[in-house]
Structure formats: structure tokens, C-alpha cells
Image (cartoon, rainbow, N blue to C red; front, side):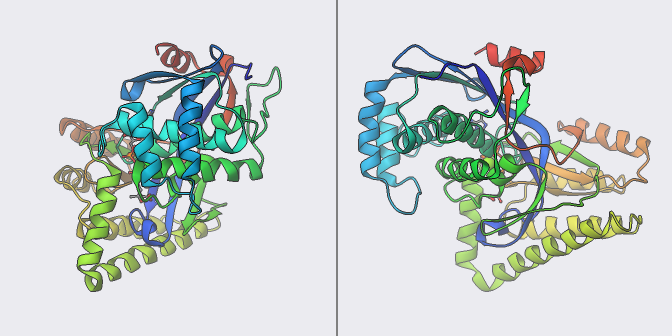
Length: 397
Ligand SMILES: Nc1ncnc2c1ncn2[C@@H]1O[C@H](COP(=O)(O)OP(=O)(O)O)[C@@H](O)[C@H]1O
Ligand SMILES: C[C@@](O)(CCOP(=O)(O)O)CC(=O)O
Ligand SMILES: [Mg+2]
């Protein structure tokens, strides 16, 4: 029986280069963002599991016998590939009253929650009697990895409640992190949760959510970037909604239709990620301003490539044009099709130019803010150490 009241948080991410191509085994460079998802965990009534997801309007509660019976059906279908099978997802949908093919945020969030809860408890313990609330500072479905931050928080909390990983927070401590081995387990379960939401994720988003910082990711191999310069980045949300799952499926279709045309584009994106990594790693030892025009050109070239892959959007074209009129360079980040773009702010950019660009972007109906990148990965918190704003948001549910 779980007895403590605790919170878990995980950061969103910004992909500098390699979105979409990374799904097909190419290199991506990604950094953790200073916007986080928070999960509050507390003991619930004996024999009941409750979840509240205010960001997507979900408030559900189930009794343990019903969940155990469902778990029996799901566990029987467990396959070797560790991917949720069609039969498993159908059984979960039927149980939760979600229509086949429903892809609304609340349906996917509920499905991912049930899947992770039942699969983790089947392997490591009993269905927990806890109350879970998840709230995020991240916009949902905007390219900043909210799905992965959600899956990472769920994986960490559920693995801890089921005893698969430790509860590293001592009495009196405000925050704590897990060991490398435990983080690897959290990451692998978060990846499974992402699969429920995305269909075919690369795993880069959950890796950043778990480890934080800045990393290179390729085909499951995670390499932390140690000496990355502090880049100033302006983040702009076009507020055009989109679904990563649909966009990733669209890219796959295009590649199958025109392999000879599309594969070289993916190779070029891969080369951009690799060259960008070399430039970033050379910058701390040689902090010359001449690196920035190179980074800006990489943004421009990759933005064109992403348009070729079919994941651009008129709102993103507008974003690039507006920032270009202030001599700044931008690209989409994440799945595209709307959502967010990033703009590089070289150190010599005048504060007036940044302000003017922000004003013009806001006049388009966009929201923009300067970000700090390289935030810590998944973290365990005492509830009393959370800010009043986060506590308030978690208590509203
Ligand atoms: N705070 C949250 N609470 C519940 N579900 C969430 C939350 N954040 C994200 N999700 C889930 O993730 C989905 C969005 O994922 P996705 O389309 O990959 O966009 P992104 O990861 O770029 O924000 C939502 O539809 C929802 O199912
Ligand atoms: C397009 C992709 O490269 C990143 C998707 O990021 P987001 O869900 O838009 O935050 C997909 C993936 O890597 O799984
Ligand atoms: Mg996502």
C-alpha cells in the first residue's frame, strides 16, 4: 500500500535538428526545456485507482477487481516486441468506453494511462490504490514533447509505486533523482507509453524527458552532449493544432511513394544534425561569433527540407518570414504542421530587434517567449517544495 504524497516532474524538449528523420534511424539533436509536466501521487481509497488530467479534461476512477480482470486479458496478449498490440489496445478501449480509431487527446491520454498502469503492475506488483493528477506547463500537441513528458512522469510514478524502482527522496529533502539503471527502466516504459500516443515514436522525446540536458539520439543510442554553449532561443507557438501521429504517418507515406526523392532529404537532415553537433562542440573552446551564421544556415536548410517532407504549414512559413524581416533565422521544431518554431538569437542580436520580432509574431496571433535549454530530466519532489502555481494547478483537479 502506497503511503506518501509526492510529485514527479519531467521536462519538455526542443529538437534542434533531426525531427522526423530520427524516426527512420537518422541523428537528432534535442535539448530539455524549462517547461515541465508535473504528476502528483497520493494514497487513494483502498481498492480504487483515480486519475485526473485537467489539461485534456479527463477525470476517471476504477475499482481494482475490474482492473485486475482487464489486466489478465492484456497480460495474455503480451508480445515479445514490447509494443502494445492491437488486441491489447482494443481491450483497453472497450473497458474505457473509447471508440475504435478515436484519436482525441483525452482518448489517447486515458489509453496510455491504462496501458502503462496495467502493464507495469502486471510485471512488478498489484494494481495500485492511488490518486494521480497530471498537469503541465507545456502546450499540448505543439511540438514540445508534452506526450513524452506525460509518459515519463507516469512511468516513474507507476514504477515507484509498484516497487520496481526506489523512492529516492529522504524525509526533509525537496528533490531527488533516480540512478542511471532506474532511469533506463523509466525511459523504456515511457517509450511504450509514447507508442500508445504516437504509433511509431523514435524515442528521442522520452529520452530527453528522462535524462534532461542536451543529447544526440540515433536508433535508441543516447549520447549526452557535454560541452554545449548556452544558446539563446526564441520559441514561438503558432497555436495551430496538429497531431504527431498523423504527421509521422504522412512522412512515412511520402517516403514509400517517392523513396528515391525522399531518402536523400533524410540523409541531408542527418548530415545537418552531425555538422551542427560538431559546431556546437567546437563553440565552448572557440567562442567566436562566426559560428552563428553557420547555425543559422542549418536552420534555413532544414526548414526547407521539412517542407519537402510535407510537415510545413502556412503559419510556420509566416513565422520564418516575420523573423527573417528582423534578420533572424527560424525552423519548425517537433512534428510541424503548425505547433512551434524556434528562432536562434545570436549573442550580438540587439534587445530592440528581439522585442520588435516578438511584437510582430504576437501580431500574427502567435505566442512567443525566450527559453532556457538544458533543464534536468525526470525528478522526484516533495509536494511542499513545489511552487504555489504548480500546487494550485494540481489541487484544482
Ligand atoms: N498534461 C497532459 N495530460 C494528459 N495527456 C497529455 C498531456 N500532455 C500530453 N498529453 C497527451 O499527448 C498528446 C499530444 O502529443 P503529441 O501529438 O505528440 O504532441 P506533443 O508531444 O508535441 O505535445 C495529447 O493528445 C495527449 O493525449
Ligand atoms: C516528429 C518526431 O521526430 C518528434 C515529435 O515531437 P512532438 O511530439 O511534436 O513534440 C517524432 C519522433 O521522434 O518520435
Ligand atoms: Mg509528442
